[in-house]
Length: 512
Image 1 (tube, rainbow, N blue to C red):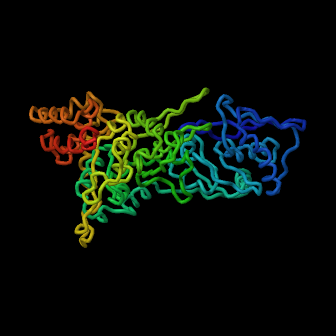
Image 2 (cartoon, one colour):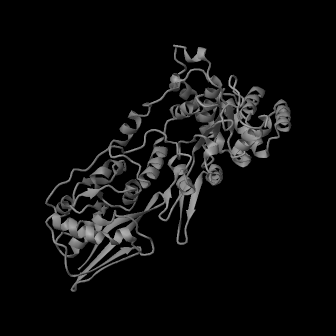
Image 3 (cartoon, rainbow, N blue to C red):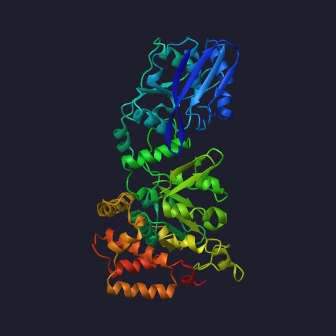
């Protein structure tokens, strides 16, 4: 008897339906074809044990299983459940009439229980697109898949529950998630707040400008000056997720297996802070079985690199392309996958090895040339791609001891949201452009045109600071954002002067 069950393979952040064809005839052999990897081939032993413990016998006749399309590699243990159900249906121990209505995914333990799997959200979206009635999967993944409307999602704890449900002997309760209610309920819940920060008004202003325009930012200052503390609070002033952004970001984290059991949809923008020992592949994605890297996990959020010069130089250089293109392509001999990587880069670093160069009170103990050598660990092309470069100094005791709180994040966020609304209206007809940081050269010449006085100021700054052509574009983008925060239609001299001030860490202007 020939029976078909249905699963899915995840490539990048999208899924492809996999048809599992099981042919059951006389004989005693077992064949599994269709480009399965080792984990899929090992499912034979897991299925035998799970069925025996659950009170079912594994058929002993000749079984040939094809996983179509056969030219797509099938990876991981998530195919255990559809393979087991297909084998039982082919052996006529299970009613096969409902198999074409459901996608099945799940890893089997030896005792028959179902273990969670990765990438269920893209699979659920594909199942709805292909007209499947429902999706049967481990209970731990049910809420994640249930954010997809018009699809019945059934979470099961054991394979026995699935077999009895498919046979009509048991009812499983569908998991229902009110996506919009859950999405809007927790958008304002943050662990940190700008009101906790004493002093550092110039840095908080730089963070506000960065958030308003989606600009990359680097902070340089001595240890204990508050670089990491400020970076962690940047997420609290970014505009709230749109439902589309939330779904796209959740898909990436679903593929990477980063979604919690009780989480259905990511509500807040991601904040990723990898350690400086990270490898190239872990940063941008890839591997033998490609997975999204940190630049993709930070999509629509913040990637924070603390102590930037301590990162391997090659790791920083591979980030240059995704910083410009806002996506990363992982290519292999047989296929390539694209991962989105539109993130805000926020970095921090000490000014020198000892950390006290330019400190107002403590002397720098580094030998001659050490400061320049330390700064040279970060390449000029990478610094050029960072729009805002701000120096941070320690907060004096008088500011630390102040009792009244600073301006809260919600007040800053309101200004940021208003500025983003102006940009959203401005770029409404341009696909893929949502904020000033994403402006192309033609858009820059259209919406960030300096007048004569601004041009004179910009020319003097370019000559004095020896800025590159890319830095010229960055200054105009930042000044456009500052003008948006002021609700100004045109870029004025004060806007441009503030933007130029945010380039004060270029090597020529920093006294190196």
